[in-house]
Each structure stands twice: as structure tokens, then as C-alpha cells.
Length: 213
Image 1 (cartoon, one colour):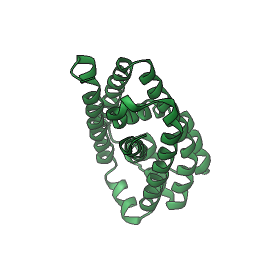
Image 2 (cartoon, helix red, strand yellow):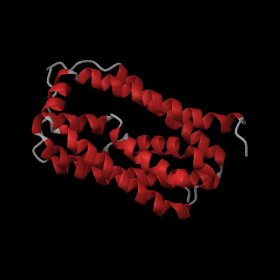
Image 3 (tube, rainbow, N blue to C red):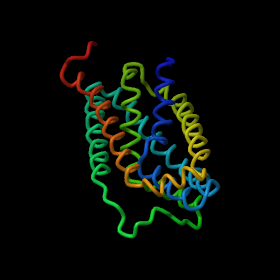
């Protein structure tokens, strides 16, 4: 295990939570309408999904490295294209017909748990995020490193959750979200597009034979 691998796993987990996506926007909606406590309960439930999908993503990445670097690179390329598709969809988002940006949830903890475990985008986004951030250390990845990577990732999730919980209940944030919801969604699209470029940037050299052994 190297410091680069630890840092990559930590940043992947941190960005997986902080980069705007479906769960991020759902959290902002709940926080804008119901405050910090409801948002914290939602994130507490969603943490189970974060751990599940990221664990599966790390297993897939390590398995791809064991099988061969070509599989790892193809995986990164596909994930990059997937993130680009999410980003493009967000950039083309339309305003809601009812004009409402407030989401009322009676049981935010259960909503977060269900949302995290059933979100069909959870695994592909985790796979793309961890692939992009760990691509530079792909040669050192093996199954013996998996427990340590999961531990570092869990710490990254907790740090990201604390950051989000600290800001979602603020009155300024709530007012800003309600006023600029469409812009926030489209900004998230730009971020996903940028992350897609990073994933493809790491994968393409290996597929084109440009990466040194």
C-alpha cells in the first residue's frame, strides 16, 4: 500500500459524495425544506448504499487488475462514457412544471437507506469515480489491499457527510438552492463531464498502447 493509493481512495469517496448527483440534489431538496436534522438522517441511511456500491466497485477494480490491465482500461473508458451521459442529461435539464424545489420526506432515514441501496446510478458512478482516482496506482492494486482501501473510503464518506450536513441546513444555502435549482443541476452536469474526461484520460493510453509497462 502506498500513500498515493490511500489518498486516491479517500478522495474518490469524498468526491463520490460531494460531487452533485441524484443523491446530492435529493439531500439539498430535503435540507432546503426540512432542515439539517432531516438531511443528517437521510445521509445516515444513504451511507449504507455508499459503502455497498463502493465495496463492489473496488472489488471490480481489483478483479480487473488481476485479470489484466486491458480490462481495467476498458472499464475506465466505459465508466467515463457513462459519466458523460449523466452530465449531458443534467446539462439539458428543464425547470420543474410546478416550480417547486422543496422535497418533504416523513422518514428521511428510511428514505436515505432505500435511496442509497436502490439507486441504479450508485454502482456505475462509484466504479467510475474510484477507477479515475486509483488509475495511477492500478499496478499496485490487489485483493490484499481491499480492506485498507475500504477503511480509507469509509473515512472519506464520513468526512464528506459531515461537510454536507454542516451546510445544508443553513438559511443562506436553503434560499440559494430554491432560487438557483436549475443552475445547480446544470453545474453538476459540467462536473460529471469533467470527471468523465479524467476517466477517459487515464484509460485511453493503455488501450492505445501509449502507457509504459
